[in-house]
Image 1 (cartoon, each protein chain N blue to C red):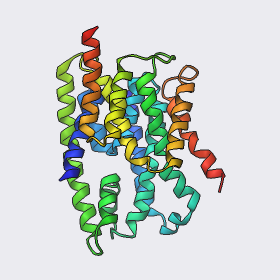
Image 2 (image 1 turned 60 degrees about the horizontal axis):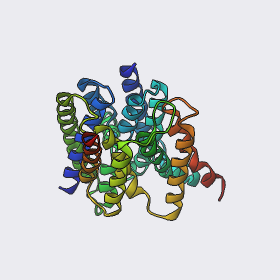
Image 3 (image 1 turned 180 degrees about the vertical axis):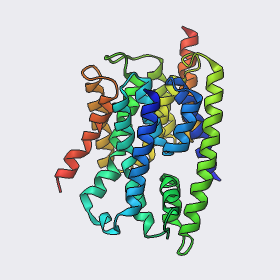
Length: 100
Length: 205
């Protein structure tokens, strides 16, 4: 199951890249298409943030992950580098769990 | 140099996230070798780790991968490639190589693209391997808070994209749609529904 997903996503994403190299450049002039492709990652990533932070088994839960995300938000607003944001979020959740 | 450190850190996180999601080290490395587009890779393992179906995981990865098509259209006018090299160029079409190639002075776009693409490819794969091996040694990911690292990684990816109010609104709408969908739909689907937040912007001119 995992292998099927790995290979299907790899092939699909490669074909998406190859498609761009193979079509005429006039495609870029299709304004709506361009706007969709540029904007689409924004809501998808936002959705991934909240799902990974708050989703349980078909329910919303607030646990140590939420605290980690809170620390991450503060650090992102302070323009901290990627690694610091990720490590601080993990450390926050780990400390909360260790504290019980 | 700055890109190198960022890619290394991001690759380590991806390797660790893949193991946390239940993938093997070989599967994590296969993703970095074959899929080679960070946000799609994170999305795929995120959905699988949350118990989502393979179809939902692949769909999320593909939607995030559509921006590479746009990058490639732009690159094809800057970087002359013919024949089989187009396959290699396609695989190296990612955020970083596109950014460097489009920002490079006239005449250096192709060099910038190839050097950046190849360096990031090598570094990304090494970092994935190290991250996966490290996380595989650690045992329970919850103890180290690795599960909390994944949403933070998505947040750090999202932040530079939210450059104006319109994008902020789209991000907030996407997050709300996903939260509402969590109790109602199978894992993986809420993220796909979040993508619908761009639709009103496309309809209104």
